[in-house]
Image (cartoon, rainbow, N blue to C red):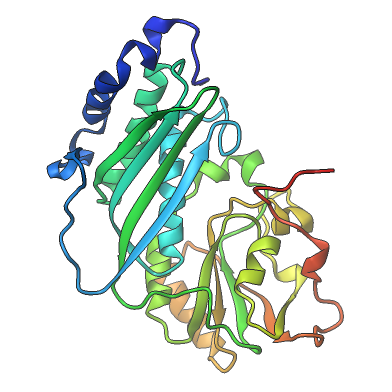
Amino acid sequence: MHPFTQRRSESVAALGETGLIAAIRRWLGAASPRAPYGMGDDCAVLPAVRGAQLLTVDSVIFGVHFDAAVSARAAGAKLFKRNLSDLAAMGGRPRAAVVALALDPRVKIRWLEEFYRGLAAMSRRYRTPIVGGDVARLDGSVLASLTLVGEAPARAVTRAGARAGDWIFVTGRLGGSLANGHHWRFTPRLAEGAWLAGRPEVRAMMDVSDGLAKDLPALTPTGAEAALVAGSLPRRRGCDLRAALGDGEDYELLFAVAGGADLARFTRAWRRAFPRTRLSCIGRFVRAGRRPAGTLKLEDHRGFEHLHHPR
């Protein structure tokens, strides 16, 4: 569904800012509590927590993260799930969200209603209220940004902490996310991330959003490099090695397991906990300059670069 219309009566311009905010409240329904714990005040009031708090923000832009082939409801759901995937990568659980919207006055009311109903569905599914947000004008496009507040019940697993000798694991399959719709159909690995955060042998973790080739260096310890085995990369049907490394928007968990860990025991425990979620050991971190022959050289592949401009 295309978000724009030439008929003013069908557009958000017909509502005006005050009318649009009132409509958003209706569309969200129970997903947004009453002020001051939800929309309607200058800030939302959140109950205090004892553990570490987590904060993440992500966006979706028409023409970049979704197009007219993706329903408005699916685009709204994707926005919520992109943030949930970041939270999963640190072993966290969500608590509350705020949504900032910038849009052209020609955006269809019906399209925006479906977008917010997609957000509301995810809010209810993951028991995460939408407590506020903002609306602004942006000629020629639609941009929605969601900020998610979470907490770390056990420990917050960061991208730092891996060491040379550690094993590299990834969940699910990689590649082809745009072609097969995985980029909006995915399920964030919240349960898996929380489980991994409770495992002492897991040293570092992140989610794969821009492609394995681009994301893995952020997990690689100083003075080391990744030695990946091509045949171990879990690919989606029809995807070659380049697609698995560089397509992006996989939203799978990428993590390091201590080199001295009992991998057989670890994988058995995983299969008991998540029998339907594939887990693959795809390589190991080695000291820089000591990558074994026959393993992949990541420098030969590239993932998604937001600010890349082809020459």
